[in-house]
Length: 88
Image (cartoon, rainbow, N blue to C red):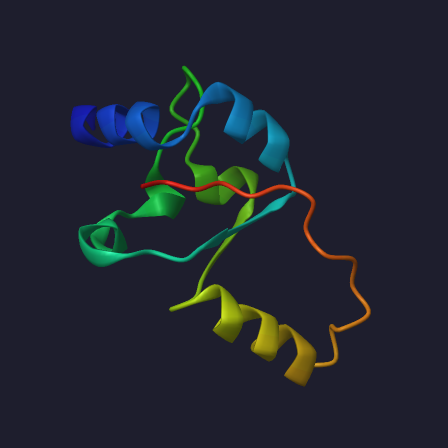
């Protein structure tokens, strides 16, 4: 829809989408009203491909919670992410 396209353009720059890459992962730590944005449904290209079809989208209430969960599930040996997307 046009609303999703506008949201996608406003929240996800082309550079951010390129950094996530196909098959990548995006961790969303929403604050306030941003929690209502359907990030996996946001289109990432002119064809309207949704972000969720291009990359895994995970949500966490805080970065601290996400790190603690990674550690508790045995993923502590995974390398830390090198990039971050911050939407304020």
